Length: 139
Image (spheres, rainbow, N blue to C red):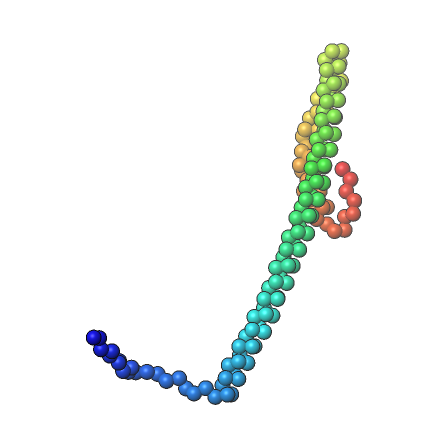
């Protein structure tokens, strides 16, 4: 029925005969490459672990700083509110008693408080938070 045809290969490149020395050399290269891979993989793993530790430490520092900053702003604005409320009470009393000296003092006190922003002091607070030598911060 069908006839099998054999095709003769032309231009065939023959591989050189492998000697035991070249086989051993190839195997040593393979082993050395594997050892190098393992060392690099271990080094990179160590770097990733160091980065992870640094990240966790830094995030903890930022969270601590956030709490201190929140407390500072809360305290500062509460203190300012109390002082301003007190000056407005004095101002009301000055109006009630028609006392110009009391009115001027109250207005001067209010202006003195609102003239400066507590946020101006945040920069120095942040510098203290980032200074390892600072052990205690008072508001």
